[in-house]
Image (cartoon, rainbow, N blue to C red):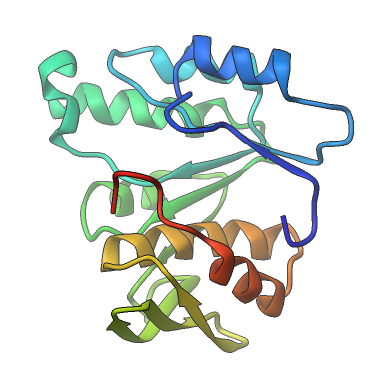
Length: 195
């Protein structure tokens, strides 16, 4: 939002019905960026939403055992999450959280244009250094190979910083400056009833 007119799916509107409702009631011709959260409980859920949204950018935040009750195996969860990357066009861009596990493996197998964000300056395209926590939130240096800038957020915890880094990687790819990104990070507010 520091550079583009943006629409983000609200709350947990991360199902085909929720995303459809946002597209029909909120998406306007003036929007330049549409961020659609895609939740999944079954194989094919993300593929279905990709047919609806036609993503050009895909962000893989995490893959884990959260939904084993519906996926039954971790392999099926991985397959479903990767449906997003498979749906990207040839010139699409994939972004991965560096989790030292599944997401990193998926990053390494991806042949499309890609970036990875995390806490490893030796591997990541975007990373954080000098992380500090206080009652006011978190502070860290947002780093790329070219530049470093101090950022502050009301959000607490390493997980939130990792998610912010992923968003910063996308913003950099979309042409925002690190100063614009730092201003945007400072405006992030906690989601009600969540960390």
